[in-house]
Image (cartoon, rainbow, N blue to C red; front, side):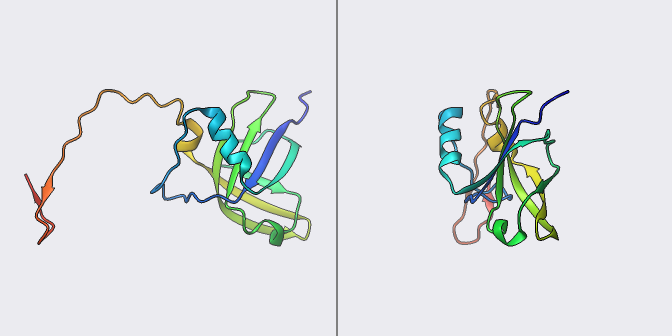
Length: 134
């Protein structure tokens, strides 16, 4: 029998699901320290959390409505932290709220990305009409 050991933290985070702005870090430790420094609520010893799933949070909807981000670790399986956006909060009752999450693929995998040799093609525009000139 596997003992529940997933750690979940709800965070107040400046990132948005549109990926227009991202934070970069030198290493995983710096990334963890930044996220761990944000205001958070924590729930430990949870059952295994799958990516892009729903969390049953033991708490009142109004207590977590300001949180927009999650970091979690399935400790029995690895020491990796996964990062995710909160996409929806569903009120079940005064003591239970369902939290739907979607993985932040950049924060979760940024240290596993292997950028191959690339070529960036640039174009200039005429400031007057914003039409690309080749």
